[in-house]
Image 1 (cartoon, rainbow, N blue to C red):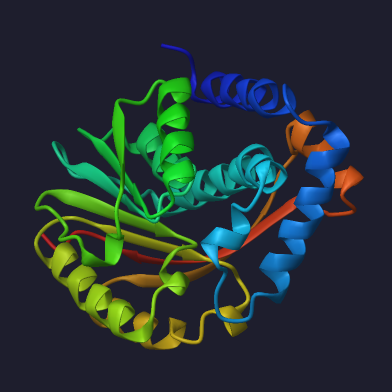
Image 2: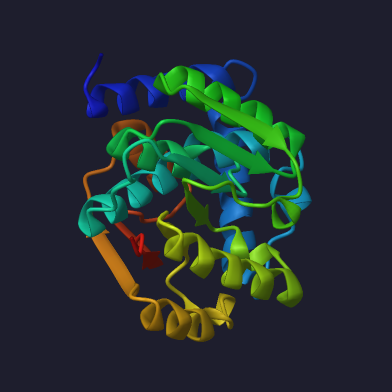
Length: 252
């Protein structure tokens, strides 16, 4: 099988071909700028329908923000040495295009990978991501805050918990702690700016009490050429990738 870096670069090249076959570079650039403004100004949440509204935004999400999120999650997983118990799967809640679960799966080699998202477009993109990266995963359109977490299944929720209402978040917080106590780790990733995650400190207390950790991350990376080119064209600078994570290792 190809190396981890070769698989990533093959996927990145395929993303360019997939989305630039029907759109001009300038159209995707404008959508990248629009989505970037949406992320910055979202305050408490992003409306997924707005984020995926139109071919340009979908392409920007998949071929620009997707690889950036993949690289961020990969670096966090490596820094944490975030392992998955032998025989366990990974459950990617609010999977979007599938990049977070894929990044962890490539590093940790779980027995299975399952992505859940409410957006049917995202699920189709997620399936394509798994296939292109050579991951044996499945993706389903569903409301993830209503689904139980299967036993022997690690959980990742990247940039998705903030989309939930307070009642759903509190239920999942309790369920995540129980998941770790039952032997499966949980990884939460959100933007580094706490103003968009007012619930973070409360979750952090629970995580630390259960033996977990709360981290802020800043990774200086050399971006792949297609991403660096779009970064410059859109007037953005992602040479430093940032995020915060809550990591709750398996308790047994």
